Length: 149
Image 1: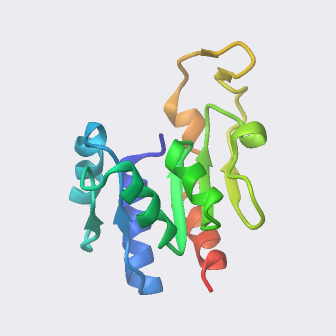
Image 2: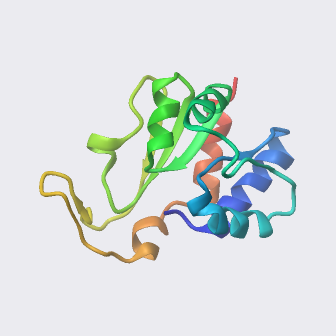
Image 3: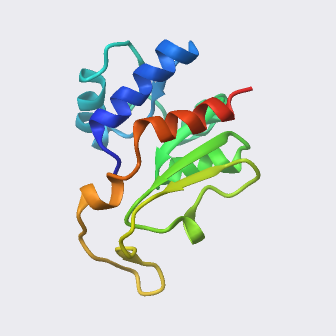
């Protein structure tokens, strides 16, 4: 997972500099993490954590202009619905699991070998800083700007 403080900084920049709304969508299992991100923000995002059924989640995602996510199922939902999708990758390479489709972007900057071996179904705990650290807020923000109409 990318760092909470970087998600917060990115969301603030999107709101302040691009005049866009930012919404967080996740399950109740990740409520504490999303609340940690929001608590570090200067701006007020929309917090939809735990508010939607699966069907409503699909619909909500379909209404997004850009969807930014770690390597997760909702990232693939966004890509499948034609939403401009930016996937953030570290322990797993986006070669197999990047957001599929024209114009979707996987950001992958680590120099480490993947910690996930998809063919064997194994995950080796890695150093979050070394896997996700090379992805800067500015590099993601630049991609967001290019995804907007």
